[in-house]
Image 1 (cartoon, rainbow, N blue to C red):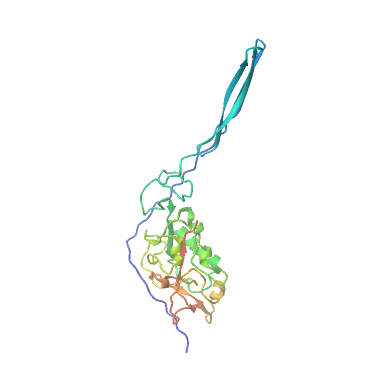
Image 2 (cartoon, rainbow, N blue to C red; image 1 turned 30 degrees about the vertical axis):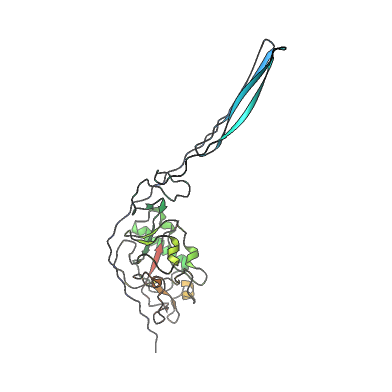
Amino acid sequence: MSRIRTLLPAALLLAGCTAPGLKYIDGYDKTTGGSDATTSSSGGAESTSIMTSTEGSDSGDASHSGTTSTTSDAATGTADATAADTTTTTTGAEPFCGDGVVEGDEECDDANDIDDDRCFECTKNRWVFASAALHNTGALGGVEGADSLCRQYALQSGKADDSWKTFIAWLSDSEHDVRDRLYPGRGRYVRTDGVVVAETVDRFFSGSIAATIDVDEHGNQELSGGVLTGTRFDGTAAPGTHCDNWTTEKLTDFSAYIGVPSATDESWTMLPNPDVNPQPCTALAARLYCIEGE
């Protein structure tokens, strides 16, 4: 008897929103001053004055200011001048989230308190979506080919700014765990309709996520079918050949593990049902999860 595989339909309707772009502001320049020395003589007495100055910047460079002391010998009428050098260290202001300046460990600073834009508490909100396109086979050109598809989808959506080049597919194979491929962003991971999917990157590896990923790159919310992942709940690769590392479409090769976009438990990345998972490497109708990187 032939083995019949089916995907679980899923759909979720949510209100959408579009977030504005990020604002990045460069830091300050630094300048360094020079030194000056003068010598004068009068009536057999010679006096030398030396001034050395190095000006620091507001980023905390050290500055040196010279002071001059003079001693006089009444019997000879001569004076010796000696210069004493003192060192003062100044430090710039501590990075402040909300001042519009990207500094320290801040990923962004847009100087506002809007939670659902591209910058939240000086960390970046990164896009997550399930592709609108359905893929009929496991022949994706490897994980690199799947990453390239995600970047095309992000570019076509118009939502990712220049960061479309950083997207990857949530996809593992026999040689790569997706947890090692995903950029460890400090901020939240957000659907293209503004709903938070993961508060931190570690949430993806916890066995659950905060919201379903059933919204595509355009913000459309009526998605069904499965998602090609090859990935267990902890971000490591599922067992098997992964359709010869996502390069083959053999009907007899059952190694395409799928997740369910309407789920928030571990099923979102790999459905724990041996009757339907893994799928054959052809005759599929599955999407890709695409996640923004750096």
